Length: 293
Image (cartoon, rainbow, N blue to C red):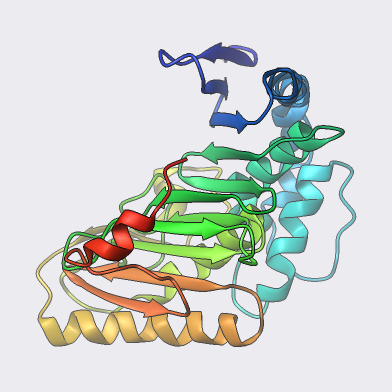
């Protein structure tokens, strides 16, 4: 495995950071000198983040439970994000992508004055917005009457966005095409998206293919738990039933103050939990108000 890599994308304004499985797109907005300093701080923090995580990987792969003291700040973010969800099986690894995004964003902001910034870790994002600022995000899984953009404004209590589902880069116990969660941090959004996506399910359905996670990845934190590898034809009633199972979990998390909103997608149907503010595709008035990052 190569060491930490940093380079500018072709547009010259977004920084690409890569090390092993971590793949980040970073962008800052504000005075040029502040942005330059923020990018330098992101690169410096990125140099050791994977090494720190690997050192604590055995504990990070264990189910959440009693508070474990981790040495690294990113690992501590992971543990804190999954602790409120420990009544259901989850490990700190469920929050790794969002926690890395949070950690790099925090490094960028230290001592800096920026207008906006984001760290996108494979679709799991940490955001910064100064007063009066907003940022538009693309939402995966839309395309059936909903627009594919949502706007986060400085006054919103949301600074993290994450998406999970069986088609994604991580294993899922459920059948959701995509579940996108808005939460206070990237870590919290990441962990919650995992839990909700796992809940969008039809246990024992013959059209759903599953295999033990350890057969696909021997070191998976899911061990022998069955993960979804294929979803066949489902009736509209079955799709609705699976989505309602996930929606119930999302509503519980929202009522507990753990997420701000969630959007659940499966086979052309969707459910919205909380003020996701996804306009219909025909609502051009709202769409014109969205501000591009």
